[in-house]
Image 1: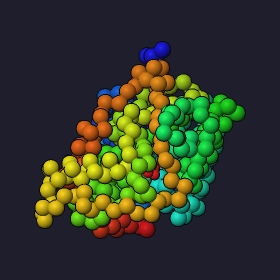
Image 2 (image 1 turned 120 degrees about the vertical axis):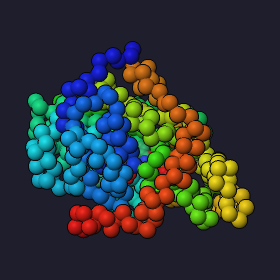
Image 3 (image 1 turned 45 degrees about the horizontal axis):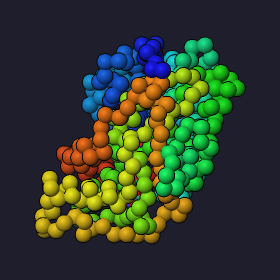
Image 4 (image 1 turned 135 degrees about the vertical axis):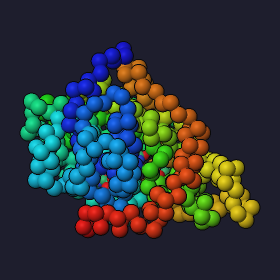
Length: 360
Ligand code: NAD
Ligand code: TYD
């Protein structure tokens, strides 16, 4: 059954955590530029290497009354408590996380702190605001379900079998959020989404890394045999899905979000090479595919992820708008157009700007 009651008008002071990252910044843009949210957004972000306020520079300028930025670490419980009180926070959309699997293999500590302890802090503060607190939406990943064989799809009631420190830390946070609903009646919703791609993604993840390396004539590292499969979703579709769940989802429920776009890594890398060769041929005339290099596999590399999002489609009426090919072309074009953004990331200038502004 489709949900018809939208409750967005009720959310006045929405705290978005991790809003200077890839998905969080797209989400804030979607809400403030859209017509279906009239409240205020308080963006709390620690500004790690993955957080870039430049992602929202125009938003900060265009919505001075409805957009507030606070540099803060969600692990700092006292500071978070102050922020909740100061801005009378009545809802949370929780994106803040350490998000890169390879980093979690090399250095898992910050994943445990931010993803588990940070989430716990937010839940505790929200719990203490019982009565005035309306919704805690937790943004999570399909990686909590583990790895699939050649067939089958992840369903919401699949057992959790996380294989990397990243997915294990996200699994722990999902369980905490669910437990606060069951035990304390905290109004929560949870979403588990497949791999995202699109504007403002930090170029450590496969798609932006390959686009920028290909443009620079650098090698394109493909882990293992390149036949690992992910289900890809364009970031604005993810943002719409989250907003739909926040408005129409049932409290205490989990919703899977996916793109119906399963793809082997090697196919994606080849596609990006071909798109670039067509719209921005290499100066030396070489085909970008010549840059592909198979490298040592990632330890514990999950073979296949694929999402069944029937629940979200049937109960709440969401489906993706973008196909993988249209979304990928838009993404390649975005990185081609954003020369300054790319340059600031590559040279680290964005971090110098943050240090000048915020003093670290
Ligand atoms: P990202 O790495 O681009 O952004 C994370 C943001 O969180 C950054 O701005 C960073 O500065 C901030 N942050 C990190 N630690 C913090 C802390 N201790 N306190 C406050 N802010 C902190 O990540 P993303 O790709 O935008 O992912 C956002 C969320 O979506 C994550 O929870 C991730 O698990 C989830 N998710 C991501 C994908 C994907 O494909 N990228 C898919 C499904 C779910
Ligand atoms: P990634 O973008 O890191 O997302 P996740 O690990 O969360 O799925 O990686 C996507 C896939 O691409 C994954 O199977 C690992 C692979 N990969 C490469 O082959 N080469 C790379 O340089 C990177 C970053 C990822």
